[in-house]
Image (cartoon, rainbow, N blue to C red; front, side, top):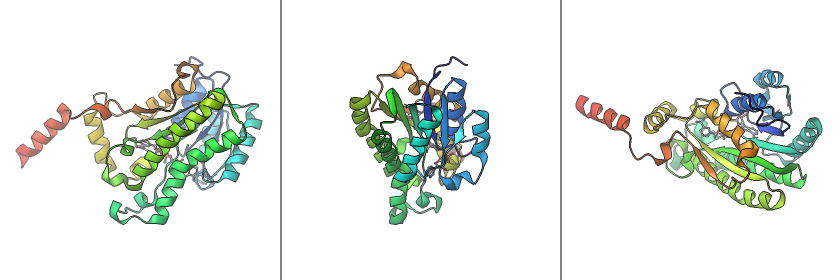
Length: 275
Ligand SMILES: NC(=O)c1ccc[n+]([C@@H]2O[C@H](COP(=O)([O-])OP(=O)(O)OC[C@H]3O[C@@H](n4cnc5c(N)ncnc54)[C@H](O)[C@@H]3O)[C@@H](O)[C@H]2O)c1
């Protein structure tokens, strides 16, 4: 499916941890469309080493940066521009982490230091990245910035706890910074609200299997896989979507607009008959 949609475009991809990561699939899809980029992740995640395989396969380099550190982001953006030989056309924020979720804390008993960390890593990092891009005038005109979100920003999924607030803030930052970068540089900023996806971040949530299966049964097209999300991101980085900005775009197989599905009705009927 090579159409060279991103030929000549340069960017930064945050968040490829392993070959399940949405950012990993995106790097592969962007590379296949002719885009060139720097890969980055938190220094801690680098220890896993897998990202180097991706870098080799996509002719990219890896520059570690903690996305909560302005200093590290500044160095990253400077080095990325230098390495790629010009301003950036696209940036992917594919970052999420909640210690409250990892430790199974219920919503009524959150550790507030961890809550602040969740917001910093999963939401404010999006603002910090765009702040650094703006301060260094690093984006090319008509560039595109994308972050990944989840429908728990709008609707309650009890085990998603403090990540629900992080996603609501993330989407709001996308709108506010989208206005600003649009005015300044005609750069667009969008968030993609993705279906549950079998990744390290996803499967860390209590009851993820059930959430995944329920969403799959509720969505007329089924859950959107990571590969399809990567294709959607490619379209948002391409010149075909230049006037789409400040949006939270549902990439969920129709889940968000489905009240109930025949599959779920059938499942509940079967359960009732067995009871
Ligand atoms: N998996 C799902 O079900 C799902 C659904 C909707 C949205 N999302 C979102 O997609 C994005 C990517 O997650 P994924 O599912 O590919 O999982 P993943 O675990 O592969 O990716 C999360 C990434 O965040 C990185 N990260 C954590 N702390 C960081 C920091 N301080 N600085 C820089 N990077 C840091 C991790 O190293 C990792 O690479 C996240 O925003 C997630 O919330 C995931």
